[in-house]
Image 1: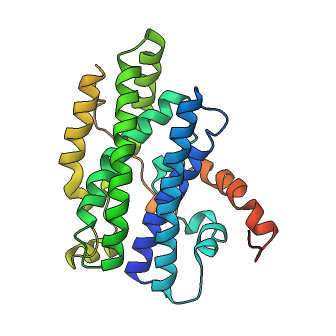
Image 2 (image 1 turned 30 degrees about the vertical axis):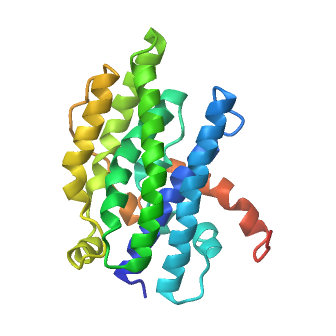
Amino acid sequence: MSTPLFAYTLRLADDALVLGHRLSEWTSRAPTLEEEMALANIALDLIGQARVLYSYAGEVEGRGRSEDDLAYFRDEAAFGNLLVNELPNGDFAFTVVRQALVSAFMLPYWTALTASRDATLAAIAAKAEKEVSYHLRHAAEWLVRLGDGTDESRRRSIAALDELWPWTGEMFEMPDDERALAEAGIAVDRAALKAEWSRTVDTILEEATLDRPRDGWMQTGGRRGVHTEHLGSMLAVMQSLARAHPGATW
């Protein structure tokens, strides 16, 4: 039976794995060699976070499932990641804007989780906090460069911001089981982070000379396993090798 701590840890792992895989798709396609290395390193950070979270989730579950089992042998509906993380990369501006919006949320999230009463989650958060601090700085610098850059980079940045904004509301949703964990001092109250997220995003957008989109209807469903049409095809690629050779080690 799934416990709240297992489900919570699994959702955090899914967030990291899906976004990490998306960023890894830039390998050999980034605009410059330096940027390709930067995106690959950020992807590796996220996949590393996913690995320790999946391992801990398997330990909590107690059914003998490994990190590979949880990453490669679950179907789309079993994933509880944020929908924004599974969207295709789009152009470089789309990837930069997404990374800035998500990292602006994850930095205070990991910071808050370092105070978790769960020692394992607190230790994972302490390492992730340092990594995401770099992710946010990197994305923010690029967003300022693009938003306050050429007419074309500005146009693409505005288009990406408008397209991504309706996907940001889900970051602050609190599933019932997660709310109970937050009240017990184990999880983080996501809703409580919105003010800090808004201040960070507003600061970046002001420097990038971009207007903040108006809040309106927000996409939801990822936490309940209701995903976009994009996650299934992404998982098919990501899981193909492990499913073709189950039990293989490398």
